[in-house]
Length: 271
Image (cartoon, rainbow, N blue to C red; front, side):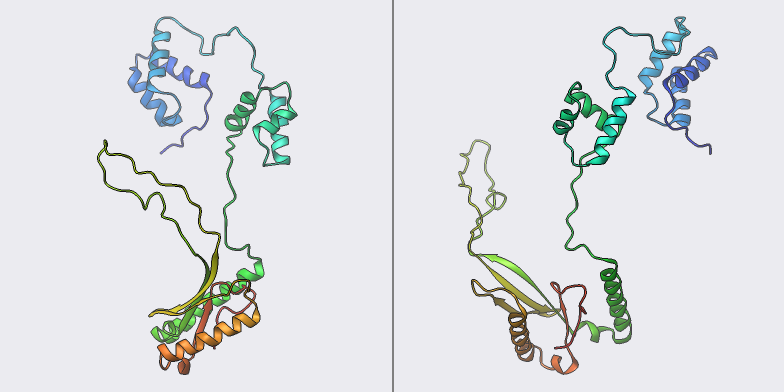
């Protein structure tokens, strides 16, 4: 199996067409051979037929005919200058870039950026936290510890895990547009719905659960924040809830896995 030739020049493909046309090879067969050697996108079958007809009619030149008109403003100097500007600031817009090249239109600059460089504007991907190498090593160590303990204790290890998280709960959550969809005929009157924003009044809720269900739901008072004292009070209430709802779990030892714990701290500890 031979390797496909990438990015061939136009005159190279036309020379192949002229050679095979002289050997009376059909246009369909020429297109198949070109696709095998240069790839399926090298030249369309319609263009192959066009060039086969041109060579049969007596054309000998495989290069483009000189065309009249305004010369292209996309020069090597412009391409290099645009490349330098973009590498200095990846967030440049076409409008801002046009201020650096007053004699070049925005359409030309967009063509240079999108066609010459194949650049596309991409947004940064949101992640919960940017971890350092130390954080990653500690999380890896915790994950390996989990696997080792599960291998030794099995299901008994999983039943001891209690996890928790915080979330904002709005006082009023309006019905979304998708939730208001109804089955109607095309000639039925359209239902009108006023646009409303989510209520500005909200409260922080802390939810703790294990694999059997929810253990504790605690709502914070308005104007308070989660600090060491508030977190300890929540743990005290969680201990009481476990004692009432999961008899014997405190004796075997609870493994608390809290989503909001900083990665520099142990992810599990007994309560």
